[in-house]
Image (cartoon, rainbow, N blue to C red; front, side):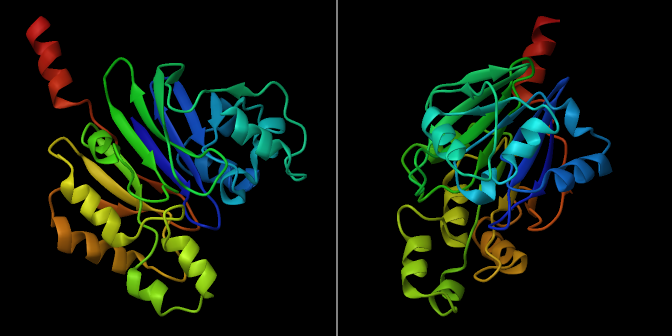
Length: 271
């Protein structure tokens, strides 16, 4: 399974996932031209994508949805409430025949099964995703804009082969930084974002023996840095697995997710 973060942060979010012949984009918070050119750098044509899947209606996740649909012909998948909120934004423009999934229930596109988990983030009905190859069993988690570390999240992460996990802010940088108090309260509150400390403790608490890598995403430009985020995580869980930081303003290809060991063993035993 191939994962490319095309951008991650408050300036825009978009993630490409491919397994076999199925190619998906998750969120469209960047321009169509940036998405097209950044995918082309890694040998992919955006028009070959099977669908665009939306997590929630905040502008850093949906600002390009109309262009992705109209210019590149991508079908759009979203839960009904997210779709209605997205459609209500004047910048979205016309999108025909949206595909609605039910939050909390899985759906399938091509060879990929997509599990949706409701999040307590301050969106109308935000979700995060687990993307599973139905043939190989590879499982990738896309967990940003979480609100807080909610019940069940640790258990799900323990089933993953790789994860892109929000690690939005450093507690001290937010506390003593320039943001007004209301915004600090929103970010650190139960419906905002999770901190480096929250994310590090979550990964440390998970049974991560099968985790091939973790990528920290949605880092704040004002209240965090890749160096601070990585240091916080390394202090908590050391070198148990490779750790990366998604680029706030560009694309980054992550290591290929290999077939799970248990799947390889099962194949060998039945050969």
